[in-house]
Structure formats: C-alpha cells, structure tokens
Image (cartoon, rainbow, N blue to C red):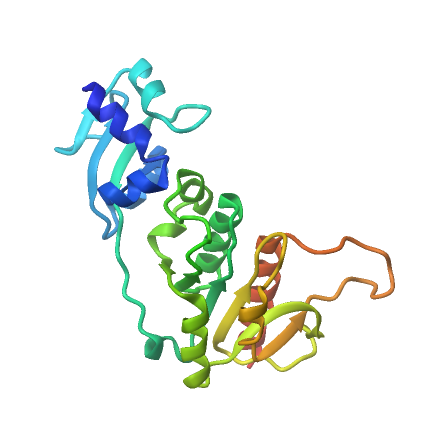
Length: 248
C-alpha cells in the first residue's frame, strides 16, 4: 500500500477531511462484515491476511495496520466507506418516535444515543449542526453497527422544530421543572429533544418544547447528583415511551 493511502485513512479522523472526501473509517471485523451486508458502499478494505476476501480487499501487514488504525489497539481490518446521505421528510415522521439532539458534543454520548435509537426502533436522529459528527471514528465505534440502520440528519434544529409544531407533532424535552415522566400522558409518537452535556436544552429550543418532562430521582427528597448523563437520560425516556406503547 502507498503512503498516500495511509495518509488518506489517517486524515479521515478529521471532520473536514471526511466532508471533503465524502468518506469515513470503520474498524473491526464484525462492523465491516455488517457494512458489507448493508446498503453502504465500501471504497476499500485493508485487512490482515485471511480476514476478508474480495475485489475491494487489500491485504496488509501487522505493521501497516498499526499505521492505518485510528484505535489505541489496532484492529485486524479497516474499511474506508462512503458517507450516506439521507433525506428528511417531516410528513413521514408523524406517528413515529424521533430523537432530536441540541448540541450533544461528546462522541461517546452520540454513539451511545444512536445505539439506543437502534435498540428502541427509532429510525431518525436529528442533530443541530454543532452536535458531534456521527461519522467521527469514536462515534462509529460506539454505535456498534447501529449507524448502519439509524439515519442521522444535521439540520437547523430551531427551524425543524418550528415546522414540527406547525404540523402539530409533539415535542418532548427533559427539564428539572418538568412533569413526572412516569405519570404524565405520553403519545406513541413525537420528537424527544435531548440537550447539551453541560447546558441542557438551549433557550431557543426550549421555547419550542410542547411537553416538559422530568426524570424523577428516588426518593424525591434525597440529596442526589445534579443531573444524569445525556445518553443515560435518553435511554430512560425512550424506554418509558416504548413501555407505554407496548401496554396501549
């Protein structure tokens, strides 16, 4: 393999390079095997001998894999994959459960949220432009393959929620002054908005929330942590929505 190929793969750790080339990196046999069975197009697979076969596969040495891998412990295969482009049609979201992320910036949190969306049958995750990039290598690894099934969109979140309000789609958000998640009425569909790790949901987005929810601490009067991790909170809210739907 050439020095230029190694430089290209290494450069894809940077968002600007991913946008310029329209490519992202996936590592590990299981993930790459899933990508090969998906609709995504693989440009190239670099793998140790005996791992993969095919026209797009180039066998590399362990030393070359160390230079290619973006992980602390190099995997046995690295794939260069074309970034998919998904269309977002608001009318198709009616009746569905959708996640909207207001500047969730930690790659691990975003990857976990995408994985949660996949687990709870949520097809669309809508992100503000300042959220972490879903094709960041750390995010891709954290999704554990969910990035292949969940469609992630980057939009003007304020405008998106304005349009959703016009279509009378419920917009839920978590707040300390919200109504108890476990006792308030929840619809089967709607948009669940989760906020930034440090600041929560921003003021402009808060104004577009139609239902404020609270994840109650237990017991209510006991001193406890100030807040929950955003990915953990997302899992709790999604689980309660799906539990209600199952009981309906």
